Image (tube, rainbow, N blue to C red):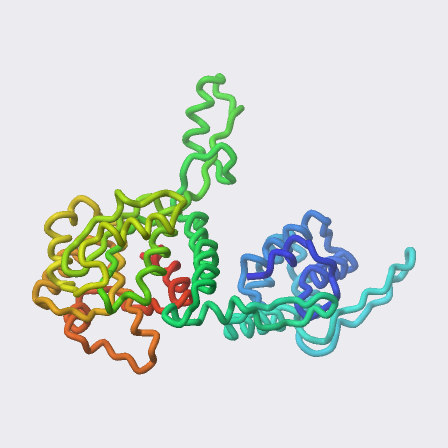
Length: 396
């Protein structure tokens, strides 16, 4: 995807490899010089179109620009020839002399490489590096962000100040869930899609005139979550942050149910205080029996399946289980409970903080029993791993 500043032109073009806006304007000028009418409005549509195609695929870019620039069918041949000349690898396009007319300002092409391919390579390098690029004042050179280092640090190694900063970063990341659009269309006063049926029904009150058009837009998809968090002693280094993550999820996904388990199961949802994470965590620690004690995962999940499953889990529910899988109880009960949960839930995701160690293997009794009945086993030892979980909550 092209950065917003390139699509909307909010930064001054510098003629760099990735400056697609400048390149597109020059391309439109070449088309006009070849007799193909292209308006400034068409150029704006072209820049927006580049944000919705695979910029590394020249054929997809060609078809996207041909449609967005509104090229007539009879001019397709000329368009293709100009596109091949302007977006090819190798030498910059040759300038043609105009037979008459006022002298135009000379156009120079930024480099001798295809800006689409160079921008695609640059974005891929940044994505694979996994570090934030921080522009230094005056120099504009990339550098490593302290936040990128913090995202990879294990919770058990963090200081109190670092945990507080990680909580702020996590709250920002979780907000992305509240803005994710689904494919489902719902009625909207300012939507972009015209609802033909509702528009015609409205027109009956106006004598059949389409005066007031009904509109639709893509609905905001808010996941339905049930979270079961292990609060036994072996999970102590991670419990605070995992529950903070759960509370942040609850703010943007109101249909979130939270349970704690160790040697018994406790429903935490009634004790959650909106906007006060610290007070909520203190209330949890005071009221949850055997906090930081032993654990019987199987018996607790079986209790959840017997007492709460039909109330809180439906076909659109994702069930998250935070646990290291170190179970001292009956693994048969664990298998039975997970089988019941899996049959009813949309997705079962097990988050294990021990997976942050590359030497870890899921060989504990609890994990071996759970693996056949879960959809995903993912790490949960640092901020980066929890951020990677967020897209999975929308995956079907």
